[in-house]
Image (cartoon, rainbow, N blue to C red):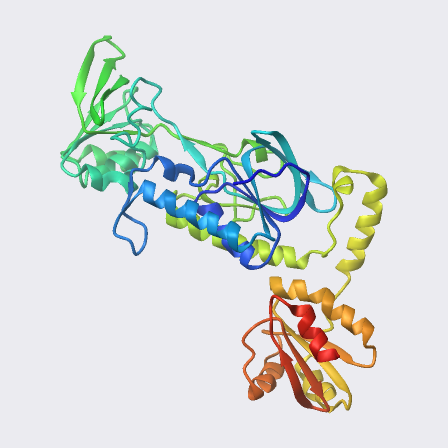
Length: 456
C-alpha cells in the first residue's frame, strides 16, 4: 500500500480492509467510482485466526492462507483499477462533516497526518477482541488461545478447554464447545453467570461443563501451545493449575467506532447502529461488519454486508450532482462555498432527456431526422462517465435529436431495440434515422469515441 501525502477528494472512502471492506471495495471500483481505501493492514481479525472451516465452498484453510488471499486480491485491485483506487496506510484519527455534502477525514500515517474529503463513507473498522491481561495470553494467541467458538470449536475435539467470562459471549462459546470438547471449564469471577438466563439453564445441565466460580485466571501456561491455566480463588487466595489445551477469553470486544461517534449514532456498546442495507444515521455513511450492532459476527456475513453497502453507495453517488466542492469549500471557505453550492443546486435540477415508451414508439420512430439514443441504467458508473460526452455532442449537433431511455423503465422501447439485436450493456449508443436503426456502438471504456463515431 502506498500512502497519499496530499489532500484529495473522492466519491467513497472505505475505511477498514478486512473481509467487509474489501468486498465493498471491488463493487465500488467496478462501478468506476473514485475510491480511497484506508487501513493499517489488509486482513483485520483474520490475522489472529488459526484456521477457518466455515467459509462457503472451501472445507478448510488456515487464517494465514485466507490472509494471503486477501492481500493478493487487494494487490490485484490496485493493478486493475489504478485510475480509480488510492490507498492510505494508516488509521483514522477523526471524521467530520464538511460543506457540500462531504466528509473530512484525517488519517495518521508513518509520514504524518493525511487529510482528504469524500462524498460517502463505508466504515468497516471492525472490533478488537479483548484478550486476558495475564502472562502467556498474548504469546499463545493462535496457539490454543482463541476467541470464536463458532469458528474454532472443531479444532478442540476431545480436548479440555477453558472459557473465561460470564456474559452471553461466554455462554455461547461454552454451548458450542460442548459439542466438541471432552470437558469445558467455565471460569467466572462472580457467583454466577450474568448472561441470558435461558442459555445459562441449558449450560448448567450439560454433563461435560464444569463451572469454577469466584476465580480469576492469572496466567496461561505453555510454550508452543497452551497446556494449562493458573487460577486464583478470589475468596481464599489459593492458587492452582488446570490442565487444558485451549483457552477462550470471552470478556467482550472493543468496537473500533470512536472516531466516528460525532457523525453516526452508536448503541451502549459503542456499536454503530445500522439498517438492513448498512445505512447509518448520517446521510451517505454506511457501516459494515463487526463495528455494527448486527447480532452475528462472521466473515461470510461481513462480506455480504460489504457488497450490500457498496451497491447502496453506488446508487447514492450516482444520484448526487456531478460537481464536487473544492477543498477550500469543503473546509468552509465562504467564497468558494457559495459558488459550488449554487452549481450543485443547478445540477440537482438536471434530469436526463428520458422519453416514455409512447414517445419513443411514436414521436421518435416517426421523426424524419436523426436521433442519437443512449440506453442507460440507474446507478450505472459507466453511464455517469458517458453523460458529459453525450450532452457535449448534443450542444455540437443541434439538428440531431438526443434522447435517453432507462433500461428497466422502458420495456416497450427495449423490446423494439432487441428486435434488431439485443442490448447487453449500458451505456449503449444507437443512431436512429427515419424510424430505422442505422448504427450502434458499445464500448464502456471509450464513450466519447463511440458518440463521435455516430454523430460525425
